[in-house]
Length: 354
Image (cartoon, rainbow, N blue to C red; front, side, top):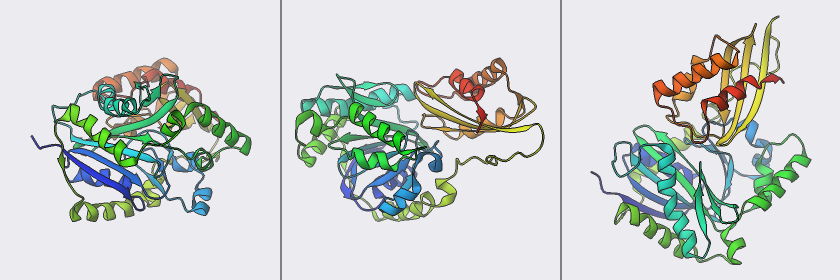
């Protein structure tokens, strides 16, 4: 078995803080990466539609790069006030649990213990949050499969720019933006808020690495190779391209009546494990085409597109749709923490004309 490594990368320029784990998964790396972005960066989850989630015009004006990642979770603002932990391993590595829910809980313990060492009582809350004893979120996490590798990512919140985070979201009106800002202030906390100050960054990093070594054993210190840098440069061209950034943008024409009897329907449904969006082309009560997106976790991620295909040409009827999705889950061993087949069914059935 390959030895587990640690890369302590400090603050990286541009989008390298997110590109690094995408590159390392393709190069067979196994271990822990600790990194922060030097400049703010908007990150969109793999199953999200960037145009629906992010105010792209604001990001362009503010000079904030937008990048879509290859793991699930929601849109967020990344900056130097966050210390990201990225764990990468081969799917066959026996050190790791097999189920996604077990992986999240297992790999969340080191950051929880890191917070506790600095006097903040924190614990894992399914499906992908770390919260304080008051129930305030102090870290969000995500993960998924990339080729033969698995990735788990999260961040220690030293401080947080609530105002800028509120501005990157696309909202129907500015009153809604104010609600987002107030909700974040009430429900999202940081080390600075909990302690009144921010401990030295390198001290936090050292504690975090030590806590991960409790579950992995001694990690071998590595440096960023030229091969990894070359792969990051290669991936940046693809990850920032319109083709990849807008990959989940519905293929269905928006707001266009194709012909009599065909409707374009939309819905959003909040499951415990995340928001589900649907865009559907429906003809005489049968689903002609459907797109599923959102900030949920879906493993294996490539199977979501095939589930969409399975739902084509099916009668839009609750029992039949739910049965089809449950059969698909069983056949392909789908895992979606805190999102059940019934949640997708409810999202589909909730769709109405735009």
